[in-house]
Image (cartoon, rainbow, N blue to C red; front, side):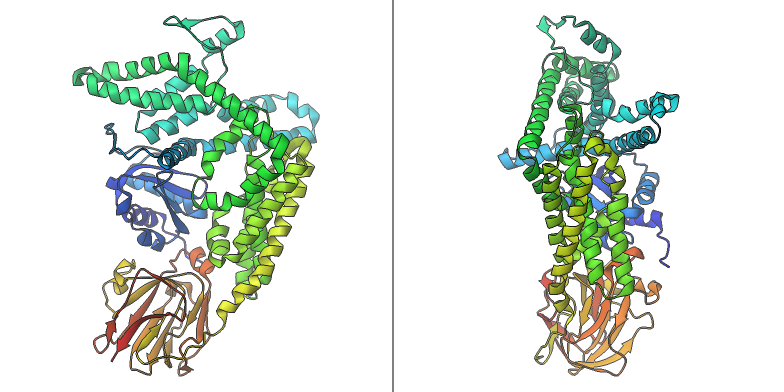
Length: 622
């Protein structure tokens, strides 16, 4: 059984690896990853982060969304809570409250698009879980009405419906909170401005259709509940006003006039220009979504479901969440985004199932199958992406094919989500009268993804064959395909300080180890995670797979040689399960050590490059 992860230690290691608490401007999380806004992204050591126990992967989106994301899967919440507790962060809190403008970048079209995506993504991130909670509550209330039609008239249904609707009705407030944090403003000011658009007195003016002006400027009468763009524009304006007032208001009067002035000036522009502009943009977006759904829906859903795995890897998928809410608000249903998200999750699961059926190792087959079940029934895909589909590469073709096929079917059958829900098969009631269409599309996505992953899986199996090498004297051949790094980059003092000898670290691409030399096996660890080899040229070599993997007691490791066996360079000597290593909370970063380095000299050794197993990556002389 895998050892229980030390959440506090993992939290500490992650924070220190991204540059320490002083390098963190803000911290938030989604379903499977911690999202850091860093002051200096260059201070983050991705190799060290990946080496932390419990980390499934890292995605550096500081150049696009501005976020540095650490993927933790099932370990997310306890590690995130430990980060908050240990370093006194709060959700979305900006650590540095300096409102001075940052260094300006050259204005380019790509830069504007990148900044806009990053702004929307960061603004929406804090409200994603709330939208999911409200949507799933509506799903279960809907199921109650299907069981008994009288349930809709009960107090339980009526009051819980209020709670289910609240995240969508007050979406502008949630968005204002996230946007203020992203912009470095005070969240309370932006939230007050957003709440003004939902105030009872404003609603009364709307109901009475009473003309009203502000400073002699007519105010458009519009409803802003569930809207996105007005909140973004108001938050932007509030942040700008706050920065300006902080500069012009004397220090002793800041507490009195900065907050008041920020809200007042923002709402002057808000009620007269920004909110109506945002409202019209929202209407146009709704009309665009309706047009796409009604005219080219199958193509749109298919393309989006096909590319979603790469958007998720890039951490950009949350920027689409507000448009789901916008679609449900206007035109009243989502025929594009939620169908594509669900079908992507089903495709990830189907690819895992196809990959599992291809797998011969019973333990590994069971683990891959469980990842697929998690995608389909729990709606969490990162463990499948980083634990199986992306490392094996070919299953990702299945994910894309399944998403495209399922999306086209969903579009042709008119599948539409009428309530915001989670991307799991258990949430299909949100499709109401189009539930048959989404079920057929789900079945299509799973079957197509599974078949493609199963069929293409055969080409990857050849990588496990021995690699015939006509070894040259003193040459070292890469034992594992992956990225080769310096020993100092390994988060283990025994290796990084050269206590066992000189060599390098390896971030493996797969779980197959080949002999780097002609020689003889001198030892195989009892825990099966390490092999000692003496080359015909006299070099004594240790290949150590993973960090602290001795604690796994051999689970996930399969040595294919024993002590005394003669070796040829390129001969397969071990298989190891990268998923099992991750599941056990260990790092797969491995070490290649010349243990008699006092008698041997490493020459022409390159690090940081990618090598395929069997490629020459160095020389050694006795």
